[in-house]
Image (tube, rainbow, N blue to C red; front, top):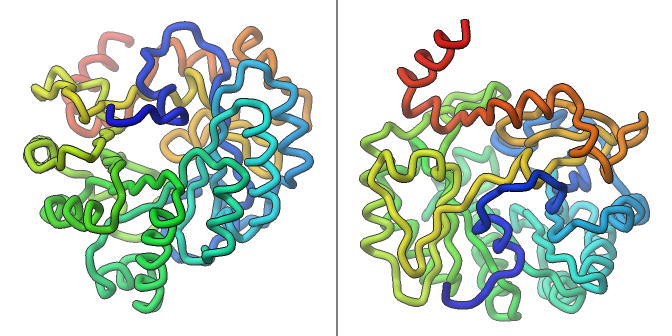
Amino acid sequence: MLTENKYKALELETPGLYELEGLEIGVTSNCNFKCDYCCAYRRNDGSKLSAEEAIRLIRELPTLKRVRLSGGEVTMRFEDCVKIVAYCTENGIATQLNTNGSLLSPERIRRLKEAGLSNIHLSFNFTDAESFAAYYGMDPRVYKKVIENIRLCVELGLETVLETLLFGPTQENMPAISAMVHDLGVRIHEIQNSIVMDHAERPGWNAVASRESLVRSVRELIANRRPDTDLYLTCMDRFLDKLGFKEEPGVYFSNCVDGKKQLHLHGNGDILICELCRPEIIGNVYEGTDLRTIYANRPKALDEFLEKLPCPAYDALFPADEELHSSTEL
């Protein structure tokens, strides 16, 4: 690892003892983009979580090591984000803000930096404005704004992470995407393996990369990785050996912490195992569920998840194994 990244350190630990060390907070479910990928759970339902309420909940969780602010588009509630980040910084908790980047500005980036934000995390799937606009349903001019803001984040000293989803529309363009990430000055590139998502309404989001495409793309990325860049590959840890992948300096296969060490908190108080691939409600903080003891007193859905540890990425690539597993349980 070129430099230690406090926020991502949790993903490099092998989950052993199950306890709440990471919390993803859905600051708002509303978004100014028109895509289907993120906010799988109750998108645009108007739910939000104020800074004061988020801080109250964080304060009660002494085991927390990191907090991720997500949405929706989190910067639609920018002041809340700054307050939460500042509180976490003061208490030694790493933070990441997941944003589409369109509503950032030099002043906002500076304020996030001053508040102590550990990582700013942006999706980066396309190298041209036309493809971006067609896929996200946005004006092509928004792409230019996002690119400008990525450069600003780097120039103003924010640790910037660009994430690329490895799926149908990107799998043939990964070398060009990787090169552009580096040209933008970003030195942490995260590759999210595609997964089947029941909530995706438009064609394309479930265009899961084939096993052959995934292997080819990952090998190309590793072979072309610049020496000053850290490459994080997520949702691949369960079949790392099976596909012949291995870690090396600057190449990390992140361990999945969702449900094991990290949970998602929606603005209405619902607690989910994982907002993206398993938006299953396991409790609600306003209806008696205590996050402090949720692993000691596991709700049934969480207990079943930890017993089986399902992996949609694995199932998509190795369906025969899943069918065999299911048949042995009958």
